[in-house]
Image (cartoon, rainbow, N blue to C red):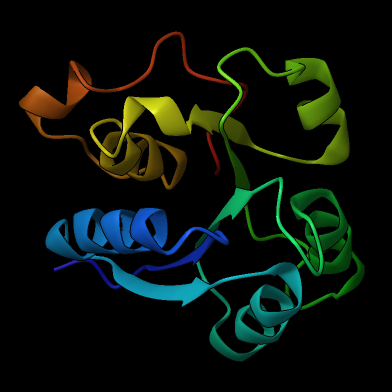
Length: 142
């Protein structure tokens, strides 16, 4: 069983639940937050292997949350995936901000687990290769 912890940050509860269930089913430990301030506190407490971060949230949005993670030496190196409703976001802007990848909320959770495994350098099951959003976004996390 996987020992990696994933922090899922989204203000929409049904999506947080769907992501949590998919990731837990794949063996990940999952921590959830409904906004950026909660996410920063949970990231410091749990030091997750990866953060799945919604960009458009109240209280503290994804861009501000990413900057907050980058300012703390304990969380600065945690890979962060932008989880957005935009199917064609400005990838250059995301990459320059520090996001490691992007996943479209419109794809549901089908490609979420393969993308997370790929970013963490884990082996994919054969069926997961067909679910991985291609081409891979930017670089794999070492």
